Length: 335
Ligand code: GLY
Image (cartoon, rainbow, N blue to C red; front, side, top):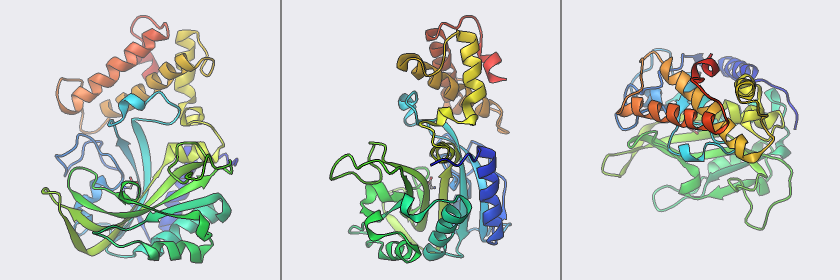
């Protein structure tokens, strides 16, 4: 699969597509959630929209689209492999009590096939298998099927795979339908399916059918006004479309990796051990720059967001030293 769409081009095509479908483009928000004291950072595109998903009227209407800076540090220790990032950008389209499942899936299918040029046979999707609280999502499955996704490419998966949210500890959530690119590689075994880590399937997009609110006591309340939340990670998606093995091989990371090569006199992709340090350093500097540049103005400290920033900077310095870089180098790489 070779579609040399850059991050900037994907971002623009996505926004243009959803604007052409009656959505209003809104600005992304700060990395610090306004309305959610349960987490330190904005973790998903829908995070700043939680009050509107819960019923407040949004000044820009009921159909919205944007790109949002996100930070997820829950699996910071996994950064260093070819895929994990602590900072990423997420594209999204929202229906605030307007369209629901059928239309959301229709928009996703049209964007993937007609704008990105993917063939239906390159896609696999997952839908919620149902449990004692929420029924199996036959409607999502039959919508995908009616659009041209074969039944054997539609996988019913349980709550741990096909339930999204809330973004913090409480708030809107619901069953979702995830879209995967099938690389065409052979299945690794009889249980291979989207979500398998063998590399056959790559997730690129998630449509969440927000019909529930999770309460502080762990219970769920069904929401009367149903919403749609979607999330497409830009870095991952362009890596897959460009046929790259890793997000770090895309143009998003070219200049920072070149800067690390220059300072360390080492080459990226020569040796797995130094590659890990290259990736950690590149990811952590990028995330730190976005935290420092955020309108909320954060600085390193021993609490809250500042603590995370301090931890990222310390790890970045440690991995710079592992690569043999001496002196104070972060400022030069951050430019
Ligand atoms: N909010 C949907 C997602 O992050 O996938």
